[in-house]
Length: 600
Image 1 (cartoon, rainbow, N blue to C red):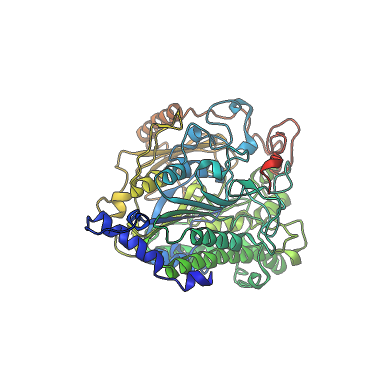
Image 2 (cartoon, rainbow, N blue to C red; image 1 turned 120 degrees about the vertical axis):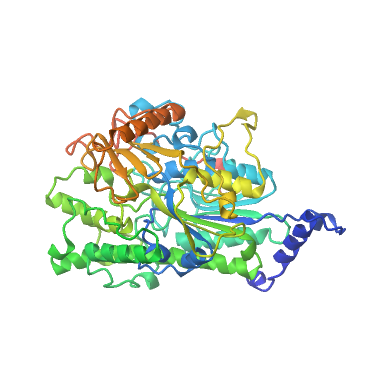
């Protein structure tokens, strides 16, 4: 690292020579310098379960100075959509296609009987698509990944098999931040890979967020100065539960949330309007019916609930701190200005274990339990390795302000993510806010476009699906206002919940009790909180969007589940309880065991 900090001009010099070459300058150098590449580096940072309104430049009170710097130097996008959970989003991110094409039509953990064996429901990033890092690598980019994968565990499905030259990855959806303790009841230990091998032992003094950053810097440094650009995928585990923090970060937000979720959400709304993230007059979505007013809780109860949000906020700030370390490193080696940064979250904030929440009854103590998600471990230990803490639905709705619901649902709080794009290739005024309709499928075609790489119709002897996303290159260069025209639309489905958005109109179908198990229609320009269903007032608009839903189903081979988590308040089970019949919340598939010859 000391060498990196004391050699600030090496990378800049070689890359600058490449720029002269592309401009046609008649200069003769040796073969290494002559091969220098002027294309920008790319750093793609994905937070896990961070809400729309958490970071400072989107209205949050959480301290995120480094992400705020990227936002101030670049562009914030207010209508960027993901899927409602992690692995479907990540499949679309890497492939540029809908998750039902890419293999995550449903999460592998909860595949319905009607979906088993159906193409697009493999539960892994399948071979019907090519991951864009494969194409970048073939085109001369170094490709590095650190963090959460969640797209397959078998040797042919791990990051090294999908285009990453180097990686250090956790293969499951989450786990401890301090060791390899996992969350999946079928596989109590998290599985990690490094450079195509399964990891037998984690580094000493491992803490996920720091380790991922250290490793990305190590990867970049290992090839610095060779004239090739790099793509770095930083897939942070933070702030996914459990909330684990180094000791010095444990009390950074002490007492800040004692005022409760209602006041905090109103304060965020005010800042969001002041910042221009949402328009004047926007109303908050109604507080969900099973969440009590914070002021009605006893002081001790309210303080304990607030402690969860304190930890969550510190997790977000800690992630920002380590993002800042990566930014500082790139500045120190002269590569910051030639790097394109993209930051987003993979879905809305985690409210609670969805299946578990459905077991409660309106107004019951059980519902209160899931609303504020009491940990079953010692509150004094929250944040430490032996604990499991998560904020619960009440605080998740704060993270989602001003929207309705959170992760796991296709309401705006579950699928609208903060997006910041900054750096090389962005020629829009610094600090600009863009309200264009965008989707996580757009990332792959955008980065291929910026790198000058065509997407093939065939790859390694097989046909591959074309991208469905739209490139942002022209928009980022100031040559277009939006990547999509007014007639273009987006669709979603997961667990039987479904939605279509075209323009400002959104048609949505949600299982009870969060929905009505019928189509709802919202004008998001007037009602971003989805509080006023206008389906009866605009039957023709409903009919138009229903036709688009039928088209979405046909185009992507959507198979609605014949079993789902929300069948009844009595039958749904907590998400982490294994079920021998192989049905939710967990499939009974045998746990994956890494091949011994690939473990080191």
